[in-house]
Image (cartoon, rainbow, N blue to C red; front, top):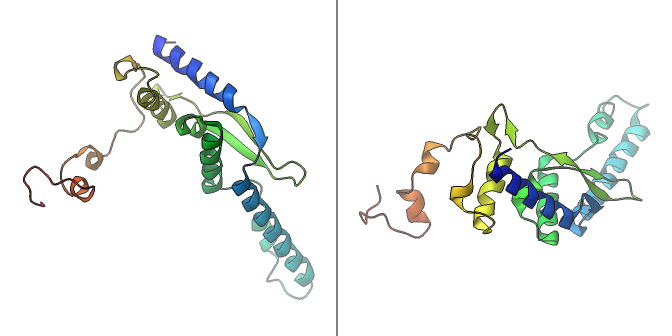
Length: 178
């Protein structure tokens, strides 16, 4: 393992120790989970009340009782955890987190980290943490020693001139829109 990866791993471990690997759901996520559980129960009740009358409600329980929550809910949970524990979002986004929505628990659990390297290439998770560390002053950009990223920047993202800069409040060097 490179010296940089050792520094990065040590920093990630410190941040995870500060946040922990499980805890109660933040209020906003807990409210959403309760709403989902309530709506699932109502849909299941409709199914049970009508299953002998017609087949219209038959497929519904298969979709309404699926375990887990989608990427939007998990991303919102990660954002809330990052803010609540003052841990960089790049680190929390690299964690695999699940929700235990049992009414007596209402907790989140980290089940591991997403891989930093896949097929000898840096995953987006590793790249985010590496460059977030520069922003936070943990190391300099010249310290970053990671494999080539899995995904290159889109050509349009590399263009720093033109309309995108102008819309952000700066006028291109020509003073005219192209």
